[in-house]
Amino acid sequence: MEIVVCVKPVPDAETRLRTAADGSTLDIEAVKFVLTGYDESAVEQALLLKEANPGSKVHVVSAGPPPRTEEVLRASLALGCDLATWVEMPPGVAPDPVSAARALARAVAAVPHELVLCGKNAGDDEAGVVAGALAELLGVPDYSAVLDLRWDAAASRLRFQRSTEAGVEKWEAPLPCVVALQQAWNDPRTAKLPAILKSRRLPIAKVPPEAAIPATGTTRPTKFELPPPRTGAKLIEFKTPEEAAQKLVKVLKEDAKVFP
Amino acid sequence: MTGPTLVVGELHDGALSDATKEAVSVAQSVSGKENVVGFLAGSSPRGPAAGFGRCGVARALVAEDPRLDGVAGAVVAHLVASAADSLGAELVLVGGSTFGRDLIARLGIRWNAAVATGVTSLTRTGASFEVRRPVFGGRATETRQLEGAHAAVALRPHASAAPPDSPGEVALTPVPLDGVPASFWAAKRLSVEVVSRGAGPSLTDASIIVSGGRGVRAAENFRLIDELAASLGGAVGASRAVTDAGWRPESYQVGQTGKQVSPQLYVAVGISGAVQHLMGMISSRVIVAINSDSTAPIFKVADYGIVGDLFQVVPALTQEVKRARGQ
Ligand SMILES: Cc1cc2nc3c(=O)[nH]c(=O)nc-3n(C[C@H](O)[C@H](O)[C@H](O)COP(=O)(O)OP(=O)(O)OC[C@H]3O[C@@H](n4cnc5c(N)ncnc54)[C@H](O)[C@@H]3O)c2cc1C
Image (cartoon, rainbow over all chains, first blue to last red):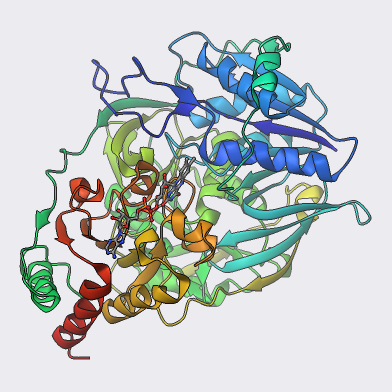
């Protein structure tokens, strides 16, 4: 199976968030960008499918500025992806999800793609838009909130579950399609040192983005706000657990007003 | 931009979902009551579409076909894009759900719309719209300007209230089903298993959540968490330490790789407060921590804390909650 997996570099979870000088975006000075969250799980899913279906190839694709985009592509190669394509955007460009999908679609359309995997959403903007927009551009169906994805070679069908508001749905679907994964492996594989070293020398195909796409797309960030720092918990003083319970119920009722 | 706002409906238990009603109320406040048009697709949408009338919507479009039950958002997106074009709509609004997000993503291309999902507030700014939405697991909020002639927005669940029920009537107009690529009908939904969640609400819907962590020590002790949640009428969550240990299935996990929740009240029991856990619950309105270690990072983000042994505090708290609620 020809598998394409789309990834996005996002700030490491431990990043201390700060607003940039212009007040409209995250200050990315000194921020470490990594392959993480649902995208890391999507790479894991792609590699599991490849292992279960001999002869498959995994092609990782990302759209964004240097150096972070190249870094997540190399990290994906080190994990075992076979090929990588980078839609190289100028430094400082932060495409909105629809523009990112337009950029990715150029790269994906140019390579063999039967199954395109995306994470449910990126851990930074949490839009969850790229998979659907990409599918529309490729002219194929897409399925979101997917868990437990398998390829049934005999029937030529993907079999998977979707975790939606209705409950857990069982589905089957033919290829080609785009799948947005809700699956989040708690223990995705990690790259071994020799693979990391080798990934530094592997080729990455570069594709220029379409010139017509505006730097931020059709949505423009105007403000990035952090909540006032939490001042720390008001600790309940007590001698017995019963007293702690009574005092807590009282503050939840009278101060916080969240008691049901 | 001017023109009507199309609110795309979704069903829950055979009636318009709460998320849909929330979208109607936002549409009414940004566009005016008379400029809101409903949309509903399904095998027999006419009955439930009457729900639009009870929200004060006078007109709705319906796409009726047995195949429309349990299709992915892609199919509906094609119908909605055509409907929005023929109405001359400027805005498509949908509730905060999986379906809503899928639909909006497609409209970004199909209808050339500026799109935003997970939106907590939508306002008109001159000829365009401005949205606010939480990002980074609720650790920050961004404001975006939506540019161009079309906007498509999926709201965040519970960010607005549904309009009051009124006895209004809605006029229904059928829309044709053409233009959907044949391949979009090829997938099959084989079954839907409604997740058994006991009597309580689901994790992402709940306005109160009690989560347990490694401090609970064993699967059988999780009963303490269940009981406290039940006394509060809330849902049960867990840290990854708990799902990794197999004390609870992964569907309970709150955090970066689990569910993102923002209830009115989040009670963290025996949870240290690792950043990956915080990413799933930091936007909760009020956070309570119960932990024996006064230096646990969870106390930095909690509003109220009890430094104590959960095995003593939690049963006492359950009793007290029951007493206070007259149970
Ligand atoms: C990529 C990645 C993704 C992750 N995603 C998630 C995620 O989605 N969700 C998540 O939760 N974690 C996630 N984690 C894991 C996270 O880093 C922590 O390891 C995890 O949250 C710890 O769970 P815990 O707080 O239950 O356990 P611990 O950190 O072990 O804390 C247990 C707490 O219980 C307290 N305690 C012990 N006994 C008692 C007692 N008798 N009474 C009261 N308190 C007691 C202790 O003082 C301690 O603070 C992720 C990690 C990585 C690397």
